[in-house]
Image 1 (cartoon, rainbow, N blue to C red):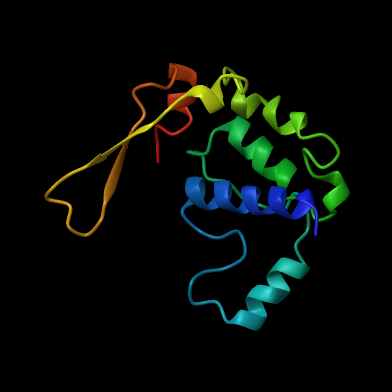
Image 2: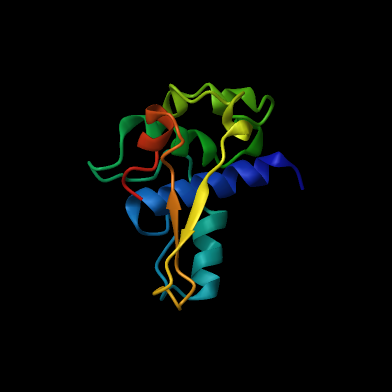
Length: 130
């Protein structure tokens, strides 16, 4: 196990967040079919909707390379941070930012809203559609 697995997982997560579906099947896909879809995945075979930003498509495609050694960030994590998708994000100040969690008393189902008011505009914009 190495970071290549984490970058793959990040690519899957981003794909699902933008496309609202798995890159490998649906919730109804049988487990063995899902396994086959993942193990036979060909780099570059993903289809994106027009609503997924081009920079996000590039990052996702770079993270979802079938060979771990070809994934963005595999040899140097700064490749991920320097990708066009993260343009305007200052990773040096990111750990210093705090995000205030606002609990509503009416939210008895433990729903939590995240107030990102303290984030710079470029960083907030990354999460605008989520």
